Image (tube, rainbow, N blue to C red; front, side, top):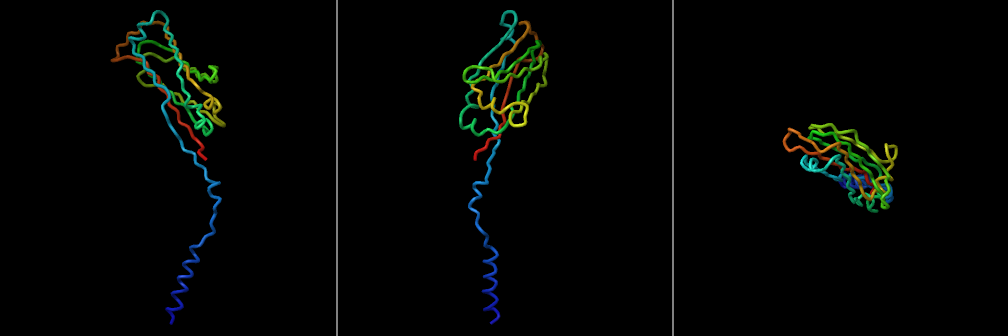
Length: 180
């Protein structure tokens, strides 16, 4: 007789203890903010190319980069950083500059790098943060349509004794996006 009363009581208590009020508004409270990382630029110039130029060597190139201003990215980006890495194994100093341009070709941000010393086997690194409370506004990233890279080298007489001397310029970006 005790089993007849005890068993249904345990079952009722087990069912009652597992019942919770459902909250269907949880979706509204959900925040999804993944971090995405992608390569932006890679430029490599062997020493022989530098030496083929006459007099002062000045390189300037615009790279179309609409990836940052596409609505799917620009409407969702919260903050991020662009990372630059420069190697110089030639025997010449050089001075790089990067400009971020909007759709009209107007400069909206400029990054001036220090003079890169010759025989720089260990890369020079620079991180430039963008976003609220950061060094630069995230609006710069949202409005970038192209990137202009300029390099000034005083002359064309590089004679590095290192194997395969060259200048390498790399950049990548790491950004947080709000998906919802």
